[in-house]
Image (tube, rainbow, N blue to C red; front, side, top):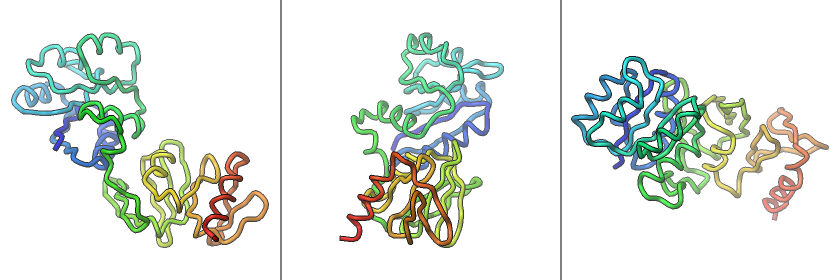
Length: 234
């Protein structure tokens, strides 16, 4: 089990990292702090493997906290400022993540801490179409069965997942969701859309029809979609 702590004065930033960590196997969020002084006291007394540390903290800045720690766990800097990268690496930080942080980038940083060469090895296996995806929605973890998904829409830093019974919005990139789905069942048809091929009722011109919904087919994705449709019908 990899024990982690988040130190950040932005509740939304903590929530995003917490959502990411919940999806990575053998990773446990031990504590989260918006007060860096409290975090410093906790870290002095606790055995932690990884600390996600924001630099721009009130009272005790992230760099000051780091410099004063006697026993340093693996430190992953999280910040909106690129200019402190050099100083951070001089203090032997493990990685330096610039906000907004994507899930793949977070996963790559954690893989360094546990000595993994393949970041996806940290993800729970989800290769079958009946496996459950657990997604953070409004501070709750909601189970979604891939075989019930109609399509997924990108909303910049979020995605909208439309199933046969509900619609959910969660903090993910479209690619990070696609990476969790069975590769033989789901295909990207547009920079903003993923569909489950078996749910496609018809393709007409540059549009896909799914349950009375029309979705556009991007020029760069049309050939791949037709290949998936052809393979699924043989």
